[in-house]
Length: 164
Image 1: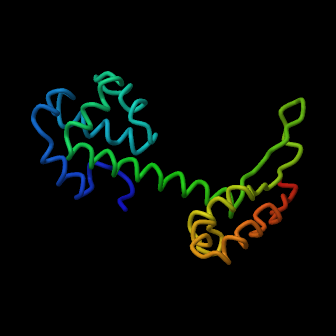
Image 2: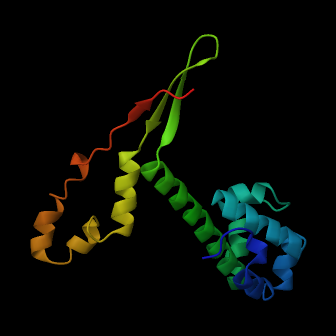
């Protein structure tokens, strides 16, 4: 899928060129539609993205539904937002994140590297047949086994390190 700027994508350009003039008129311009799509790709929410454009968030859903090409562009922008979320989830699960403890004077006392085991398991369930309950529920023997996947038993421990 496309990463980066929505307006630079060939797929977006192809569909943007087919958006009706009525839809363009409701947004004001093609640039306004591009801006709206960029915002959808950044936040993943059409109503929040509409707040940044000069179109009411109440009518934006109707406008999208009325124009199949705009609908396709919005779907692509939402996919970009999902991929960004997956990337952040993966990063936090695998590489962890820093938790900094500060003293009263604002000085760093301790830095801990924490890992989110729940995020890791959700990522694995979504992307690996081994951990997917859907894949295992296809046959009766696997259905009985699905409850014993042991998702709750996997634990990733947090580390504490002194960084200066």
